Image 1 (cartoon, rainbow, N blue to C red):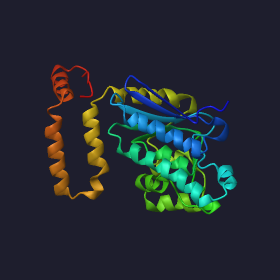
Image 2 (cartoon, rainbow, N blue to C red):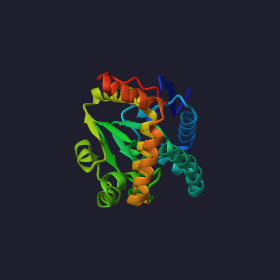
Image 3 (tube, rainbow, N blue to C red):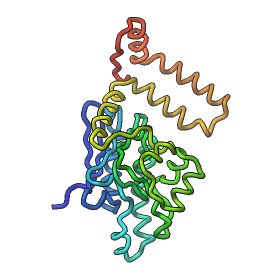
Amino acid sequence: MKSEPVLCSIQNGIATLTLNGPDTGNAIDLSFASAFSEAVEHIAGNPSVRVLLINGKGRAFCVGGDIAAMSRSENLPDFLNALLTTLHSAARRIAALPVPVVCAIHGPVGGGGIGIALCGDIVLASESVKIRGGYSAIGLSPDFGASWWLTKRAGPARAKRILLLNEAIDAAKCLEYGLLDAVYPDQELAAEAASLTNRLASGATQSFQKIKQLVDGVAGRSLEEHLDLEARYMIASSSTIDASEGLRAFLRKATPVFQGR
């Protein structure tokens, strides 16, 4: 019996989305896209979620599209249209989530897997990570925001190099490029990801939401517009339960207990 291609759980404010196709390198096909999108919708619709962790099972985090499934398709454009309509809907939902998104990645990462790997606000990786574009090697162009996230994190010149040349980029070079936020030995990645997500899940969720909105939208605003938005958000934040708790704890030199409200 074939296992579910994507697993989803929510516990203590932490949503975990796990790529669960270890035998295929978590390759992306129609069933993967559907399961991934459903999991993201479930998470986005649950108000108890305070952080999302994306990780994967097996030797590879995600090798990208299922080339064999593409080859079997009688009409590749129709196949890709169905795949990307579903997959890109999930990408938009993840980008719009009001809570922090953490990606914990390992092993080979290629094609659309790059977009999934880099869509987090914070990206942790193991030393075994190797990112390879792969698209141009089979005559295709990027999907799932791979070109967007590569450009946002590493800049256009490095993004082009990665996507044009299809060279495998190891963890150390990815960290240097800014694609990763931290690198750990493989056996420590899961514990480090758990520690970070627990920390974020107990944080000031409303503050996190406003921080994400301010930073993510900065390129589309003038300084004047941005200052106005910062003022509105600061004033709105001041009326939250977490702001009251944070101020009280600071004055008492105590650890705040945030409720996410």
